[in-house]
Length: 221
Image (cartoon, rainbow, N blue to C red; front, side):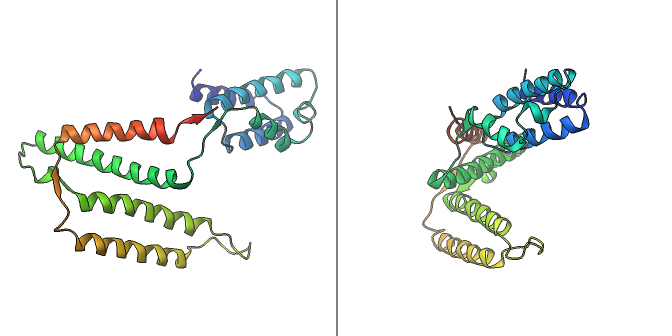
């Protein structure tokens, strides 16, 4: 079964549980799905647990009794038995962000290039990409991601306060972005400009997506 099919089957089985069993089981589901466990293996295990709950339910045994009374503690033991997705950390994390941004850049270049050809436009200006643009896209993507993470993840001193925007973090990273852009534009006459045909942009795009899938999102067992 595919992951989607397992989720659908899981939802169907949950509807057959008593309210108490469903609540207890769903606490396990939430914990496992929020973990770093491999998605397909996690859904397979959750499906097995759902069937166990229904079997026990027919015998008059509650999910709480079946799994030891503590949903989170049991879910933790389940996660420990599953293969996990290796997190991207350190320098690899920032390389992944820049790599993804450049992949999207070449995807856009591919669409624009082939679109212009279909429209009968034979000029090469739309296929020109400067080294400056590549640098700004790579660095800018990292800056934007850091702004979002810093502004959204900063803990609040007062728990009753609504989550807000970390203006200090935004200010710092915007200054960095301005400095990078200033340096880049000051070197614009020194940096080369490349003419990249749509076919080559497509090749770069494919390489980019393959890199994301098999390098950055690889799984550890």
